Length: 224
Image (cartoon, rainbow, N blue to C red; front, side, top):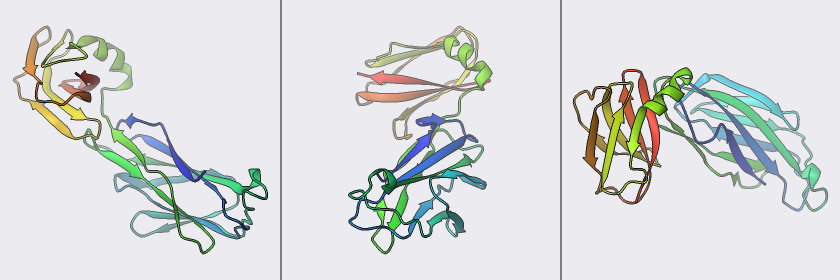
């Protein structure tokens, strides 16, 4: 019941907005007179864009040093879940924008600490969003249809070509955003194909970043 959600989930381009919701519930054995939440915002956020949106109960917001935001629900009088389960719950929602120009694979992590009166903190799950800068929205469909990555799933060899764009860089990242492969090549003109060895990659899910003059195109790759 004490958890955190982020929207959109998964990956976003740098400079995008994220909306967070922190849910809390008094699962103790008595009324919680005061509840406060400490939320440390990732250093890759633009703190000037922080904006509380809505909450289940009246609250105050305090900006503290170290990118820490405190949401204080004073005199909330939250009944415990054994007495009144529906009224034992609460939530707070806010939005914030990531910094521009963050490199591909940057992770935006967020965890909240919920305090019921003088009890120890209840720690929420950690949300994680990856920066995934691809070409602009208007160009995504044509870009994805232009770049060919095959076979997928792949074994030991991977071939890449583009019918429309010249390719400048090819990089592969794991699901944690760590670069695991960097293929150095001279500009690959449209219509040309290159093949390279990926036999040293462990089986799993990866992301192939293809750099073109129009931006980066990201495709998911399954390595067998």
